[in-house]
Length: 123
Image 1 (cartoon, one colour):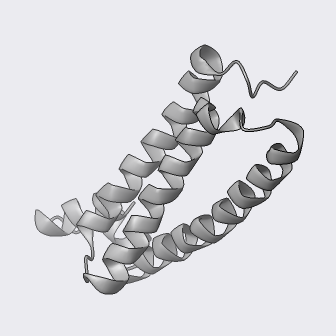
Image 2 (image 1 turned 135 degrees about the vertical axis):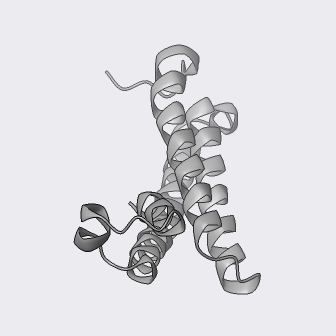
């Protein structure tokens, strides 16, 4: 939504989309709130999963493609939060970075589940 509204404003076409969407600042704030929540909850899930799996499978889970994909997604979103808070990256760059993270998430959850995961299967 942010990129659509940004494109509409950049091309000076203030049509129906411009009138119906919230401001760019509120869309960015909503996105960053969701990403910060993802970083905290996904980090918690990774931590609990590693502790739980270390009791069940002795040192075999570190090469699991699902774990590696999840950690990459977590690090990507964590870098996004750091970039916004400390390097003052704002606006369109934040949204493009979050879309890339979403696409990597989709790749991780589909392709890795179908083709690469032998250890971490759910039946």
